[in-house]
Length: 161
Image (cartoon, rainbow, N blue to C red; front, side, top):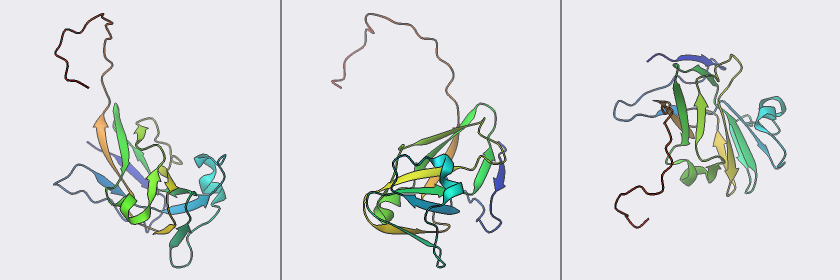
């Protein structure tokens, strides 16, 4: 499988892939903070309401929205999608929750300006640094369109769920 990757910053680290796992870490290239509920991710890169300080830290406070640009646009193979999730340590270290829990990027989001991003809700005060690894992704084949048949009974044992 070949994925073409455009980096938005030359100093952004290259992906590394752990042969023991099936996830690839994403690095924070830029970030901004907002309290405005009507602030949309599409405006994040243009407005950058609060950016990294000279030490490459971005401070946020409980209740704020933290938007991160991941510094890459990727051309996925046809009929595949990328599933983006927080790394297991993200919440413990930062108190940040990914607002949509899981992000899905399909193979059609592949333009030169289609930078991958994430939006988090801050549950406590904290900070992140440029090139932190908050998110990870894996690429999977999309679900084959099922044929749906509606029935009155399935005829299987109940498991009590």
